[in-house]
Length: 352
Image (cartoon, rainbow, N blue to C red; front, side, top):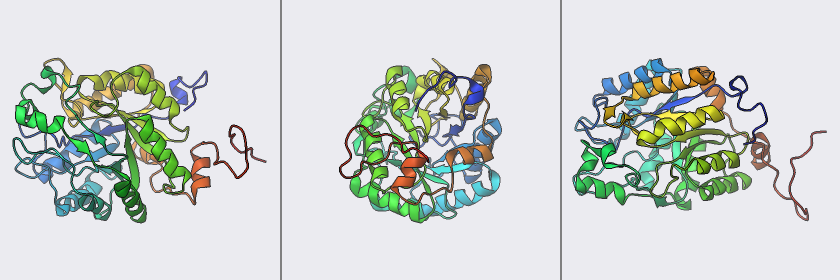
């Protein structure tokens, strides 16, 4: 993304899209006061986040025993109810489905490829499903402090080790098939990326004509195999993302607010919620709704407008598909693929 002299003027920036992730699949009942259990509570969490200013909903489903649901019938039921309760929100299902340990000492792991592929068959269909690219460590506790985890289930040694050793399984066998199924179902992939290597893989998928649509992605700064919290790394990732992409910043725990403050100032988008963070400041809890409200206040302080649901869908280009690699490259503002025999650095094609 390029920054001109006037790029930091809020009136020139896209309106802010706030993603809310209020279903916290890694937590158990008691870890946070606002974890939904019943289906009614799941729906109310969405309504409350929308009323606070969020226009994208990151979805997981929890069973009454507090564990993440692996039943497609639960996803179908929740999606049907959300379409009625928050029709203007972008509905985004978390592609992990569930990674909570089955019991103390159990593995925290993503489900099999076949199970994750079923998200392309959820009815009614979501607007998006998040997708990881390239298998990597996902040690979500690496940069969490004892204060962050105090009083939660992950503070227990058995659960801590389970999340410390978690791995995201997302090799080519998975993502090539998953992208194909999402495209066939009219569902937009929302890429969850953390490194330049992952971003470069996605760019290769675009240049090969495998992904032909808008590039909508999160920069995931949670450490432990994903990006960390160094502001220079965030800035470099923003710089490397194509101009036509839609980028959201995602961090963890008490780093969420400062990382998102940078994102708001730069003109990109933000994610909040109890899946990412439980704290306002050290020792003071903060609900998902309060986190959304905080982002609204920060945006207001710098003069940046908040997107409505309809505006968020337009910014995310929900429902858009492109004919081929060349059109996708052009829409994203990337330089074209090299043609046979072409030498030198590539330039964007000049319009006649």
